[in-house]
Image (cartoon, rainbow, N blue to C red; front, top):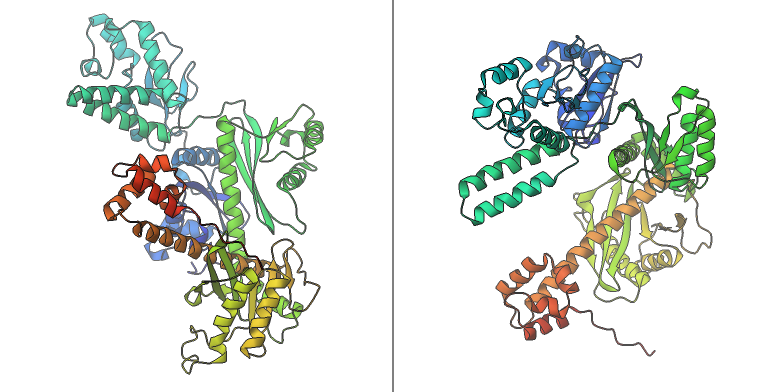
Length: 625
């Protein structure tokens, strides 16, 4: 087996969330389905040295030609989806699930006179309510054992129950408190049925009041110094919270729906489709769309519906189609889908319940798909080379700009003004070369850009002898300068270049309104094609400069507020900690009213007034010029 697999995903592209993954062979057939708490941790283990893998695993990886995954919220949901796909695809390498057995379920015979809870692999028991599936029988038995301490419902077989009725003697579970022993009349059958219904209600995740009830009893026991009971109730709360966290409501067998998740940015959109048939997820599809034109989410949804259902047969259109955003012509689309199906199709946006939860999972998958697409596009060598060549051609540069520096200014209503410089070499960020600037006095953004460029260009006008040995220094000459803004910012940057005496430097600006690229002295901007690699790279560089500037501005603002607190007379280190502990952050201290500050322990009305006054923004004097 070759150690290099062309189709192998990069480690950074694999999410660390729970999920289900599928391996495909060269004919596109599913050859293995698996689940993982951490997809990245599990999938990277398959790409270890083949000699360290189990022979069967090595054969599976050698046979595979593609790998896909779907993220879910919990391991429990991953298990359900894994079970569905194993049954549907019958993968070659899932041998352990190919026999006549199935995953174990937790079942409660709620319709029986004396309900029973037990573990089974048979889903055809009449009158039983099922929870699961689970991966291991011992795991679900452990869960039942824990829950019987809280809901002591019958769990014995029919033979054991009948023998207890005949002998008038309860079994061991009744003696140790894990069964209320209806067999010997310790509780009525109606009361026992009530406990069984509470058990089922809890397992459905529909009634978390049990936890609140037990917590109330626990606190009461603690206050009455009954610590043994409090500890027992505490253990029950922990057990119930653990079970509730991994339980999920299973769709009814009648559920028949397609659910579309959605994510987008300026240049692309991702759509994730979850197909639910017979109450189970039968398939997942996804697409990434380059947006040649600016499209709203509703338009993308409409496009996805047309792309999915155009030309399909009636049996491929479900009873319900659930979308993230309702298109403007929703009624017409619903009518179109109904005609395709031959019966009514409901088109709606899920608001609550199981489908709303699944909708969020679909949106999460769409966001991940979009991020993965953007990462692949930005790190693709061919795409980067074409982008740099396209930028050079559009701006009439002699050579592609192999080193690009981008500048952005950030402030809070004119205060705490800072600027950032980010560096991209060969289309990739060079974070070791990033720089940050404090701007003490400025009139506006154009003046700030002018000041920053003057400071940066000083190092080019007065080159350092060690610059060639240390290209991280400012004397390393850029191929292109980019500023965040339109014509005014670009003209200010050009003025700084002219005054610096540095020749041969080119500067452009990218304006967010229409993403146009401005050049100094030119009344007409350069418009890159909307889905082009050139615009994608320029936007990515601009966005990185914006992010870097904002993070520095916030950091500076926090340190400024901290120093303001330290400078207030009578507010020592201890009281500063008390304030921060009470409000949670300096931002909340600043937003607090005088009365709220005075309510803090150790802060009187007089000191509260000083704090409130010191943290309020000072009005700037009017400029009469």
